[in-house]
Structures are given as C-alpha cells and as structure tokens.
Image (cartoon, rainbow, N blue to C red):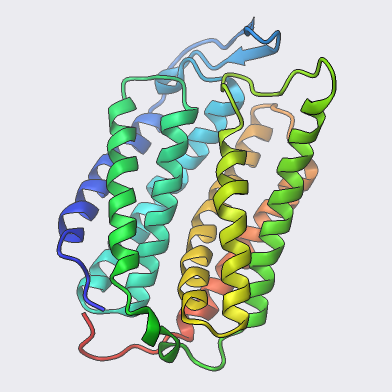
Length: 289
C-alpha cells in the first residue's frame, strides 16, 4: 500500500490553496445587505460584503461556515493524516483519503454554486488537484487484502446503519424539496443558483455510495471496508460543516428547519463516534508504506 509520490506534491499545494480560499472567505468586510427580485421572481437578500458579495445572505452564511470547518478541522486533519501516511500508517491513509473527499466535495460546490468572485481559479485548482489526489489515494490501497487490516470487533452493523440512515435522510430531504417544483407555476427556491447542484451530487453520488458501502461492509467485502472508512471520515468533516452552516444561518436570522438543527449535528456526532471506533479497530502493519 505505497503512497503515490505525486501526493507529496499535490497535498501541500492543496493545503496552501485551501488556506487562501478559506481565509479569504472568512476575512471581515463591511457592507449592507440589500434585497432584490431575481429573474425567477424570487425575493432574495444579497450579502454585499467581502468575497461573497454577490451571494445571498443564506449562501454566504453557509460558505463561511464551510470555510471555518475547512480552516480549523479539515486542513489540520489533512496535514496530520498526510504526515502519518508518509510514515506508512493505514489509519493515516484512510484519514487522508476521506479528508481529500471533503475538500473535493467542497470545491466542486464552490466552483458551481458560489457567485463568481476573484478566487474562482483557486476553486478550480482545488477541485482539480483534490480530484486527482483523491483518485490516486484510492488507487494506492491493496483492496483485496484490506479486510485483514480490520479487527473483528469493528461495529460493522452500526457503521452500515449510519450510512443507510444518511442515505435515507438525504433522499427524503432533497426529494421533499424537489417534489413541490412539479406543481404548475411553482418557482424553485434556488436563490442565486441556476439549479439544485447540491441535490444532484448527493442524490447521484453520495446516496448510492452510502448504500453500496453499507451493503458491502455487512457482507465483509474489501470494498465495503474502504468505502465505509472513507465515507465516515468525509461525513465527520462534512457533517460538522453542515451543522455549523445551519447554526450560522440561524444566527443571521435566516429561516432554518428545526429538523436540520437536530439531525445534522446528530449525524456529525454519530460520524465522529463511528470514525473513532473505526480507527481503533484498524490493525497497522509495520513496514507498510
């Protein structure tokens, strides 16, 4: 399970660019939000401050929450896991791959969801670099022998249950938002975006991967261990980010569903607990690089 040498170049660049992107998003700026009616006839409130000037107050609150999680959780985790990976740690490699998945997801959303700003090319670079780094990291695992690296005490049913719950919750939440748009004359609640790109990624990629990894893990298939491990670590970071997004929106007076304020933090906490159990049940092998 050798770590690709290209990661020695890609990961430090990703860390540096993400520091700039997240720091720029959190940089304080003065301004007065204003309301307007977009081309669909929706009343929206433009943030009118800082890097996210042309985003709505709701979108800016979510992106800044994500910036905070990137800066104070994901990047330290990326640095530590990268260092552990260089020492031949399987735990480090699993952490690295899952965190790269979070960075990839984050900057896909920034490329297609954020209103155009001066950091656009930084978002594109992070999207591209994290995509290739994630693929290289996934390819570096000797999947067929991966099962032997996990203890029999691994709570597979609990982990699979969390993955199935996440798939079900996302499916119900997003389909519940999409369904009303089928009514005659309905106006989708898109604010400043052109389509439901988050819902597309979650329903098209995240939900199927959650279901597949849960099923394979219950069947003790090697790919189940790998996908579930990477998925849990990604959920740890993404769940924390979504929880902070909801709290930040509530702080700014943006309407937030009480369900979101309960479910997302609960999923983040469950993901953290399951990630700890997962890493405790990884058996390291000396000399693996």
